[in-house]
Image (cartoon, rainbow, N blue to C red; front, side, top):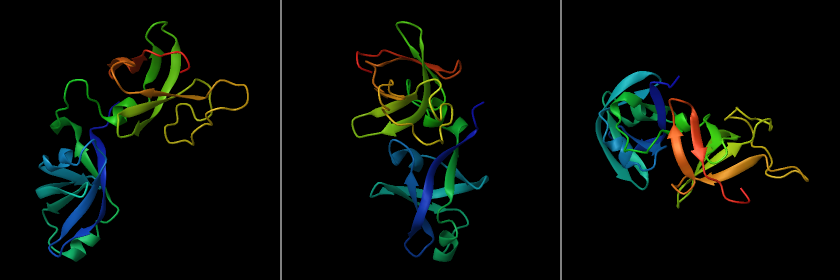
Length: 184
């Protein structure tokens, strides 16, 4: 079951003397957060009075946070958003919805494993697929299995999240179909 609230970033510091906070966003772009009217901190709704992008972070003024002391109390808190107020572009998905999907070979129907992580690199995201039965499989928070151990097959496969490799993503049915090339 998908959670109604999604982690969207972390408050990393105060900003200025009027109680603004600095949020490190966990999104493709910090612009994602500045368009919202409300955030959630420790489950409580907080009205976003203003927000702007500054050096890759979001500097925000929150209702009820009027001083540096108020803002300092929020440092290291996780900021959540309500998934129902966000409209993603066609073909875009929340990372939280992708982790845990079954990975299936689009050509053969073979189950390849589970999406255990998404790596965000400058060119594109990369899906980390953990093979069935490998250490930590099904545990997205577990330690990463070694890439190679002796003569055994790799425990993880890295798949670029681009249309050449991602054939179909079906969040409701719990799978992603992949087109692999030799050596993957």
